[in-house]
Amino acid sequence: MDKLTYSTAGVDVDEGQRAVDLMKQHVKSTFTPQVLTDIGGFGGLFALDVKDMKEPILVSGTDGVGTKLKIAFMTDRHDTIGQDCVAMCVNDILCQGAKPLFFLDYIATGRLQAEKAAEIVKGIAMGCKESGCSLIGGETAEMPGFYQDGEYDVAGFAVGIVDRQNLITGEGIIPGDIVIGIPSSGIHSNGFSLVRKLLFDIKGYDINSEIDGLEKKLGNELLTPTKIYVKPVLEVLKKSKVKGIVHITGGGFFENIPRILPQNTAANIKVGSWPISPIFNIIQQQGNIDDSEMFKTFNMGIGMMLVVDKNEAKDVLETLAEIGEKGYEIGNILEGQRQVVLCQG
Image (cartoon, rainbow, N blue to C red; front, side, top):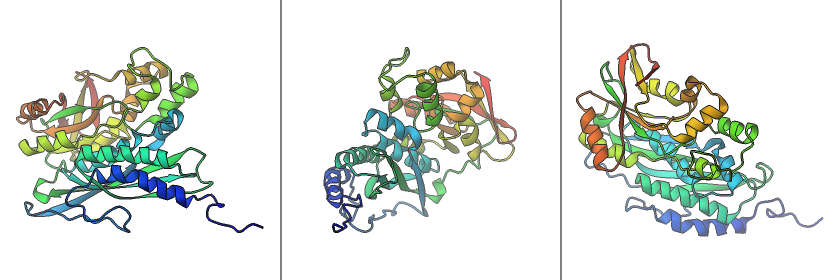
């Protein structure tokens, strides 16, 4: 029997080091002066700057990309998935008013391919720069026999900061408040099990299919990265009082909005008060899917919602317009039992 090595067991240490070398430029591009470590340390060091805060609170969040990864495998395109991972995490902590500080990633695969891993990290770095945070660490795990050839998983972890006096909890929401929606870039990173079942298994489309109503081939449309809302929302928070923020992810409108509603309040959402992205119309029509199921599964063209006093709504919409971001008054708060009511606007 030949001598057994880690390499013959399926783990290529040299390829792992080559992947790290290819990642370095992308990771370092996210560094701010608060990052105190270089790549390769056992832990990432980040110096907090809290001199302008009375009572700083750290806010953390973690998430992955889900079965949207299957589209990346099908297209062999891996430069957008990283932004999805960052967005899912930083958009969540943003809901409590937190400014993202740093991010860590985890990539696991059966057989490491350095260039592919570097493309994923490139997307993560782009997402970090878009959200104003630093990529200070991560892990690339090669796990032979655990994943099918060419497949991988990606997850991330974000930490942000907010002064306690500016913490957003939703507890001040009352009937009469206004719901403002900020558009999504598409499906984002939820509902892809239904999307793949319908479009590929049932309808027989492939990644290169061109469907009326879509400007891109189907694969590229589905890989449109999740929008990062950090910059526009933080700009709004500088100028206006926001009572609640909702990130529309898994569970759509029906599960996410009630998470910030106090007892005895409900959200009245006016369908038709914003443009719904064509991809959602295609999915609904081709799948013969009820409105309730669509709003329970997808973001339906609205990725982030802000709940504000009716006297603040105009200012918030103006702030968004000033920075080139669209905003829509999509509903209001009513008396009720922590639920979402859809009506035609």
